[in-house]
Length: 495
Image 1 (cartoon, rainbow, N blue to C red):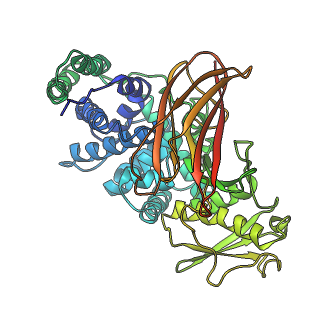
Image 2: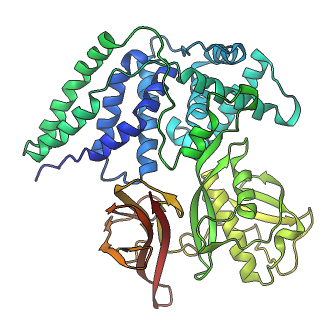
């Protein structure tokens, strides 16, 4: 069997873009002396899975998960967090209070508020259920309020302490000294060069692994003493809104912007196909992310103009969960335009797929009320409520990355998405602003479906400056035996 070629270009890009942020996270988690070792180990682990983890957001999430758990192991003899001191007295009190909390509670607060990740993404990074993660965060924030007091009382109290903690962690991160792993990017390139010159993949990986000890030793003896003020870490386009806007030096703790939950799945309806499409949106973090996502279905316009919502311009009044049934109470305006049972079913499924995905519960069922009463007669509800119908109401093809309207850098970009098992491998066509076809290629597509029932696909393309329309198309045979063509399009800009 031929040795696998180790393409480290992606790893180098990730390290150069996210290395500073991840190093600071390692220090905040109390494992500064092992930073070099942890970074190398995490990147090498990602390299082994790079052919299976092709979505840039998933790659970053995987690295964050590895960093968190490797840092936990590195500090295990001591257990507690050791957060840097900051000049602002209120912020420093918050950090000292976090260090007093049980280590796993403090860890959850640091990871969620420094990286601005909540909901399903945080649960995956911490390897916990969403319910357990949310409960741990709520417990930690309430304990912080008891230890340091709160600058706001009432409904906004938790949000206030959460915003202050985000600002305090970012202030601490700016005082963390450099990683001492400046040679890591060169080491990663060397790993790729070894395999390009014919050295077998496992030997190359072994040689690279030797640098784990050497790099860690060099980091310990060469790190400068004392704190060094650093500029904020560079963030990817997908993270800019959630990372950089919450932590500028000019923002005081009591006025910090709220943290955001990144890449929250919100389902919309295709204007032409009438099927469900998913967009990954950044939403304000809250104690009930399912409720926030359902509110987004009503109030947040889709990024892609080919998508729409089946609901009217109403409001979410509240939700109540009993067992496996979630009751959703909406304003009268939300039901405007729903005149037939078919329209009611599609609108309901839009919220069913959004809520069940976030709750991690595929058997969740939804029932609906209109201002506390029964909805209009046209809104026919099945006994027990609406539930998921597998992949039947979902479009057979999605482009997951890039998002519509995204601005990406020049050079190679990996376009990724999902396709139903029965559909043909997607053809990805790129057109320039004047309508000229730049390229058209068949995407590399997984031969079998994953645990979620989809086949993943990807294609690496080169982009120069300009505006482009990316179209992924496939053919799909429906239940009636008819072959139908489907496509998903995304507009991007390359400055």
